[in-house]
Image 1 (tube, helix red, strand yellow):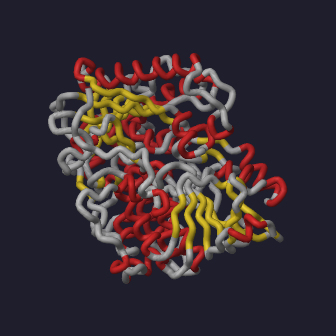
Image 2 (tube, rainbow, N blue to C red):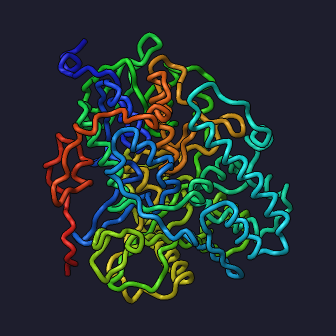
Image 3 (cartoon, helix red, strand yellow):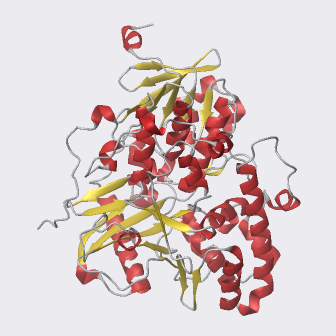
Length: 561
């Protein structure tokens, strides 16, 4: 044992990565009396719930464009309430008559809440395909009900419904074929696939249905942006004796004698704990952090090496000096009415025509005046899918391995072309706005990789891993090492990883924390700090040890220059 290790602290559990899955798991562990350390290589906690600011006037959400199932009985409110955080995050409902607007050149569909109303809208838009749509809805609604019952199960698993047996390992494309649906119908039904980043042919019915069911139970936006959610979990962690360390990168998860033993940081410091939870990228966890070839079973390493990722995304962040007369609904604009062909082009590495543009209007969703931009201005994001790998960007490797790219001419050229394409597609969807631009900034998959260390910059984790439909389980197979996040069972979006984080805690603690939390608060709300006027969730998410550090600009609502 060296001197650095002697100086390091010992913990009951260490969580690597502070995405929502890791924060939820840490929250339930610390609320159950464990001493927990959360380590985050970025400047603030939150993963893709992170926000950033520009010109001291505009605040942009990285990944929280809207959340599903956040009503009183919803999954995310249940996770929060079980920890005594129910009144710390307020969810503002989007229009139940149309929270998403799907726009194709020949048809527009406003997506409402509720499976029955959704089915009626689809049949009205595509009357010639009413029978196929009805069959599609029947399968999806039944799968959604079975998935929800499984997530909340407090005792032995119930008998698997026949619909799950039939469809659990089948793809969305196979369901479309079963229902005899046209290319246009498939595009409308898969229009929201940007919420998980894969084509119908590579998306399980279960994954698509879980995403859709969340939103059909009600679409919401968290007041103040996604960082409020992360900051609330940080408040819980620190008030209950846990610690968050940001700007702290883990070099190795220590496995000794076949058991998790702690972590070693990049500066050589060692923290010891009998329980380690990795909320980091799955492939990086197995192949690098765990040094899998030395410490993990051969089949696990082989699956990690051959695994593929969901398509990465690019986001263009836009600020205007005027408000546009638009509803608060998100817009999914598909210029090509063939979803399969559009994804095939991207998967082949071609981006001559963008597959879709997703437009999300934060300044229209958040009821807190000035939270996203100054009054009278507008803040929105344009998102699309990008080719996998680095070739499209003129590179051979990514920033997680130290590659420098931000000033490379090839990268800058590809980024500029993509920005113009996204602006063009957005104007095709909502009309001209370029003359009112005051800020434009594009985040590419390499940006995502730099901040989250995700393989290939994918925000949605694994696409394939072993057999069709197979995903890594919470229990890694190594005593004391557990997994959570986008790539693990139940992962997928903010709500999915929050649920997965709670189930990870359940596995560690040996009791169903979601069911226990529904019966009563597990933490102690009296320990939570009061939020003073001007409370800043971004500053809170830095952790106590870096809360006063320089470099964090507040919003003063004054537009510079």
